[in-house]
Structure formats: C-alpha cells, structure tokens
Length: 155
Image (cartoon, rainbow, N blue to C red; front, side, top):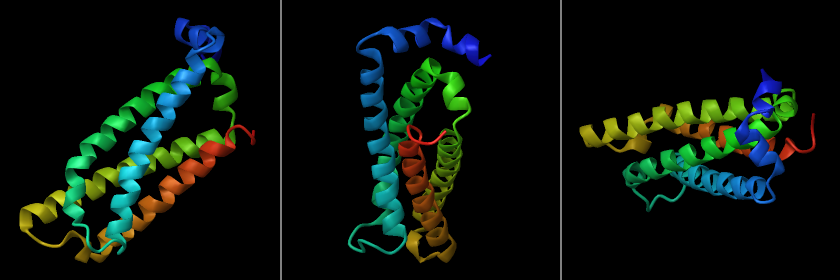
C-alpha cells in the first residue's frame, strides 16, 4: 500500500517538482503556526497566564485554528505521499501523529468547556479540570513540535 501511495500522481508531483515540496512545506508550517499559536495561547491563559485576556475571546479564534489544521492536514498528507514508506517507519513521525491526534481531541474538549462556560456565564478558568486539560494540551503540542522536528533526524 505504501509503495502504491508513493506511485500516485500527487506523490510524483511532490517528489519530482522543483516547487511542490517547498511550497507544501511552507503551507504546512503556516498551518502549524496558526493551530499551535492559537491553541497554545488559549491553553496558557487557561493555565493561569495572561489574566487580562478573557478565555472566551479564544472561541472565535477556534474556527481559524481548525482552518489552519485543515491546511496543515492537507499539506501533511501530500508531503507524506512522497515518502510514505520512510515516514510510516519513522518513530518520530508516528509519535508526532499521535500527539497531533491527542492535541486535536483536547482542543475539542477545551472548546466544549469554553462554550459551556459561556452559556452558563461562569469563568472558564475557574474549573481545575479545565486547567489540567489545558496543561496537558500544552505538553501535547510541545511534543508534536519536537517530534516533528526530529522526523528528519531519527528513524
């Protein structure tokens, strides 16, 4: 299956084009910056930093973060096709994907809690469990970034 993925038209375009891989990598990094930038700032606020910011102010930015994730996922899949066999056997890559999956689940949990706090007119950061989820999310996104950087260096 991985060999077939590498033989697809997308994989060939990414592998052989002078511009495809660098262009997709740029889109991937921009998507990462949007997703992780928004979610980490939100998580830091919920963890107790930046008390002047209302955590509910991050709700509208959630849509932007999910859009960033969409571009990140599309570009990541395209990049994967060009080296599917290599990436599928790369421990750092697999750890990165696991962190991203957990990070997106935690993002959904946090967004649901913020929306519930908004409906009930309570302070979202007052709930200790929300603070704990935010700290876990921070660690997860940090792990995803580190693992992503290590993909090129660790097999």
